[in-house]
Length: 567
Image (cartoon, rainbow, N blue to C red; front, side, top):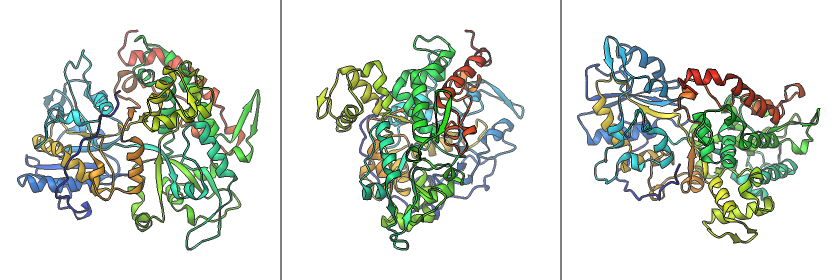
């Protein structure tokens, strides 16, 4: 992975109104033989469709011979449509949300309804290598480096040249979201390390918190540091960053290839120190019990940072109570809301209909923080010159200020430590779940590609971002020149817009999509084994680490065989 290039300024002209007023067709009207009607099936969860519909409106204004129709779905049908062919679907472009189809992309030629095609999907290489009107760079060169590397199939063996069969249509940034008004009111620091995050959690538990909501001023609120929904927790998107921070990007990525640093296939990829420390940090934050020797005992209340009862609600209810924290009343049975939650940059749009006036007025304010650096990094061989977590925090503060000095206020470190911490601070988990596909049997392929090229143009990217108050695609553009970016999305840009090195839960390798290699083979999701109401349900982090390694080791021969690898 490479550091994101410096953002380039783009012009935004004539942004259309919100897409709820969009002139784009609503789908279902396509003639199967109409090459100038592009029917788009768009995933309508979290991010909604307003931004893309606004882009389509402007595209049709510029291309009056082409009509764009939309079908919004909560669950894409691509996984079934692609096997059956054009008799079952008239969709020309899928803006998909879900696991990618590298297994099908790599499967070679296919026969659909009596016609042989080279692939299930239309190659999008010509889109990636297109230069939008009035611009000077290929679309692939505008894509953030880490994303371009993920979507480019070029491997020098099967794919000898730049090859793309899908491209991203949403960035999908995740992180720890926090109630910024509450943090400001009580003076809680934005944590730089996981040990500092634990300290902040203890401060929140100890604090007596009272509502400032006009309808409940003075009412005591029971606030936990964290809440999440057990059915959609998003913790995985956080703790995988801690794994990558410690082990480094290359070791992290090699796991998904099934290989060690020397290129050897081995189950020992699951025994890395970064993985072990990842589970330990999660236990610090979410564990409701603690194991000492053979004894498991309940943690003291001052060290329980997430009430398990907060996690049994639907994801919408969990998000609503988080956003409506100031209206939450005292509950003698436990916390009713939280100061933080793991989530994504879709949160604002997903909750906007219920909280639009409060968000616009600033009554409800939440932001995304940069994922703290795992304090376990102090145990890494490269960080021996860092004395303790306080010096680590001072170093991170300097790095965040773009300092390149090996010594400064509160720190004096060796080059290896500086480089290790700087690399760790820049790591974020990218999303590979929002990809654009054109089925090979579409008869409007060229028009669909033309739309994608416009969507990835400077103008198209800006329209999408401004229409949605800050939702973005993983391409370089100057969000600072746009009006109307929300406080929440601005915080996302502030912490991740520069110096971000995105890693992926990479499903593009055969050991994953054929061999079913997974970083969490047992006890997943792990947060639901740590944050429990009953001692008998608790699984200690070292056991989770060991049993995941054991399961990968037990299945290794089958993983290799199913992936077609002779090891």
